[in-house]
Amino acid sequence: MLTQTDTILNELGIANNCKISYLYNTDTSFNMNTIELKNELISRISAIEDDDFLNAIKTILDYKKKEPFIYLTREEEEELMMASDEGKSGQFTLQSVMDKKVEEWLKE
Image (cartoon, rainbow, N blue to C red; front, top):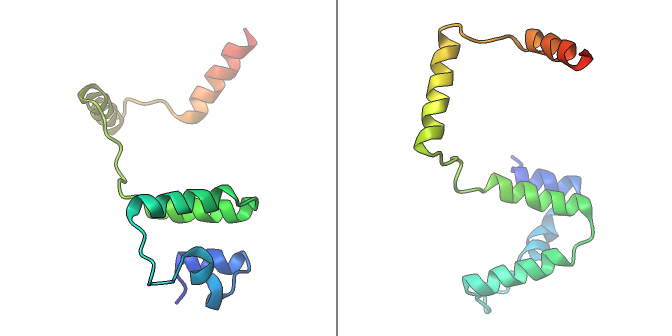
């Protein structure tokens, strides 16, 4: 079964047997600390000119995000809760109605 990373690398034409050595330093005799590893990755990514490959890296990084949450202020949370309650009670305008109102407004 292919992982998302495998799929991306296959689409970019990177062979399965070389993808690990291509993306990572697999030499276990040299262990980088976190800062060194980040600097190495920044350096290597900065040298890449292939937009498809850069987008593949971005996809991998987006997939591995640790924080899937958006932190809201108390006021933002209250606004969202109020909007949710309004929607549940039928206090909303359909997008098609709003589109017509905007069209009319733009004609004025």
